[in-house]
Length: 168
Image 1 (spheres, rainbow, N blue to C red):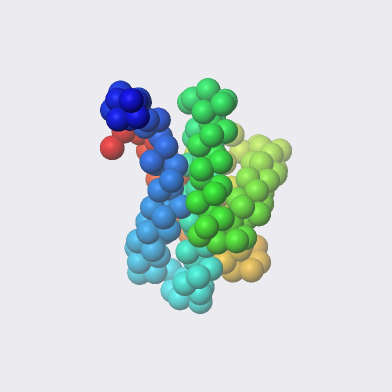
Image 2 (cartoon, one colour; image 1 turned 120 degrees about the vertical axis):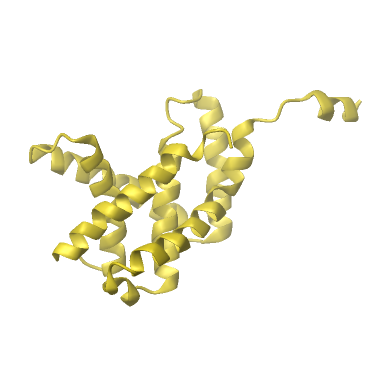
């Protein structure tokens, strides 16, 4: 009976993606470092562990945000529980950082909108990119290169998240 149940039961197609999200995000974060280090010398000042941590958390934050509205709430909660469990295995501070990232993005998007910014790409790229840059620099991004980096890393993170849950 168990054999038939396993054979004919449908597994949630997003479940494996949920289990793999942190690991895949971390792997891709390393590729982003390689691509961006050729353009921005200040990236060499970031520790590998900080880069991996903050870029991975940003990627997971954006990928989890893509679930909202795409699936029913019960399924979303189930997948988020898997993602959080995997994050905790990877790094003990990751859940707190995920919450901080989400809160920062909400505040930053509201701030940008209050300044008259309405372009959704600018709002998203700037918000996630600023969170990453601020944590890596340990201060607000200020120089032209740092601000350019904000938008580029933000775009890279968003582009990754936008396709994460699509069938592969």
